[in-house]
Image 1 (cartoon, rainbow, N blue to C red):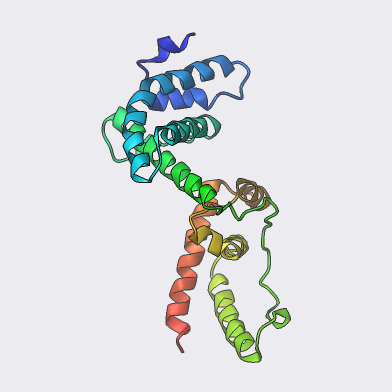
Image 2 (spheres, one colour; image 1 turned 60 degrees about the vertical axis):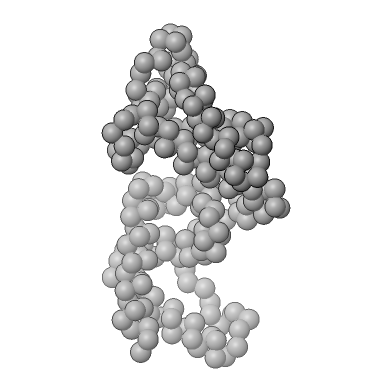
Length: 224
């Protein structure tokens, strides 16, 4: 099948084909679907991306590079979920999705230009237990405060499962990097899913539950 035969397919259908790229029986149709997606959207997408890049202080060349990275992201991680985009028109929904990826790629480009490389090295590990407060290089007063807070967090987590604790501690370990806009390393997330035997969606749910319960507990008991 040539990519021209897929030009009239809905974008969500093209993504489903692309998701089969690792299956030898569907590798070619996945490539055709990807090329059909690129041909259908790259012109309009680039036309709108160029002025955005200019507003960021870049030229057309950078816009082309960001567009290429955006579509490359689609190929590598075809995780498009049509239901999460509140836009009835399928083509507009895909354009919004492309803009979302391009925004992240543009931010990464800016950070790279400023020398602000990704702080994650690939050596990040799952955090299974609370740190030893006594071993920290802190004053006695600071250690007392940290110990009290740690005990409150432990009590909050006791309402949840051990898996909640591990997910909370791991995300908390890399909180500063996440606040800077970086995403948790894919390798670390894969290890969490494997070690805890959870789907990525469940990891996300558990993380939100843990942080919510702890925030509520600290608001009630932390000020006493």
